[in-house]
Length: 348
Image 1 (cartoon, rainbow, N blue to C red):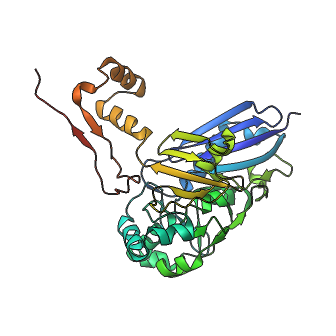
Image 2 (image 1 turned 180 degrees about the horizontal axis):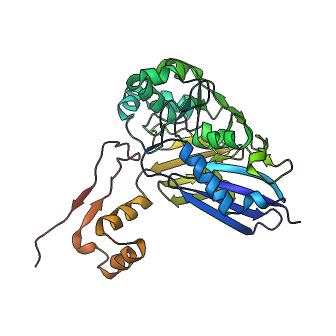
Image 3 (image 1 turned 45 degrees about the horizontal axis):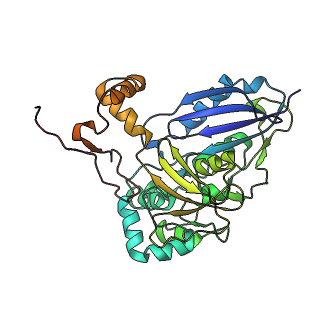
């Protein structure tokens, strides 16, 4: 029997499941399923996509799985009532409706104050600004919040029944201090008006629990702590100190590995934790790969044809310049920005 491990990538656009030979690191099987479009979603869709991808990868029929773990999109607000049901659709990292709340939070305390306490300044992406929006705009729903989780935490809960998270994902909430490894409940009290139950923060080598029988596999399959998507990418790359990674997905990120918690007084760089016990200074843009897919959709072509069209024109696009702030922007912090096409002239 070849021992295997299963990785789950629950991203903004889809869920992917990969079965890997634990000895060689070779991928043996995979499956995927799409997520709904948009910046808010019922978490039940993530579970449905996971079940589909899990089945397509053939995981339920395996009896050689040692462990499974989840990497997930960061920041998203999953607010649950006392029975474990969502009180509102989960607001994703790229949902900018909480921009006024983030702006006010920054004005009240300033970027240095926030960076010293949670490693980042308030932006609409982070969970705390979303909870503040919920309290101010959906007070009845906010009054029923008993537990707050992130997308990867919520899926881990479905796998093993435990309410846990890891440092990397917790460090993007706006109420966790990665340098001291503890929550800042006073920030929840100040801006949300209450302190709901929060996931227990696991260390890199701790197990979250064991896989539930409903997932198949048999035996005592360990469920790992998981991580935020970029921290998981850094772990998979074996990112070392002084190395920098650039990732282009739904978001665009640039991140590095650091033994010390970064402190950027300009608040441009977020001082996240990584998945190994160190830190992951990171810069993120909202607009990245979706710029290509959105433009291809506007032209009515698929990505292959879009690539062909792009390569067939001059490298300077004849003077056209597109500023692709299609979904607002996080870096620079312009949540209400829109796209702009400049340099147009009459045909000659």
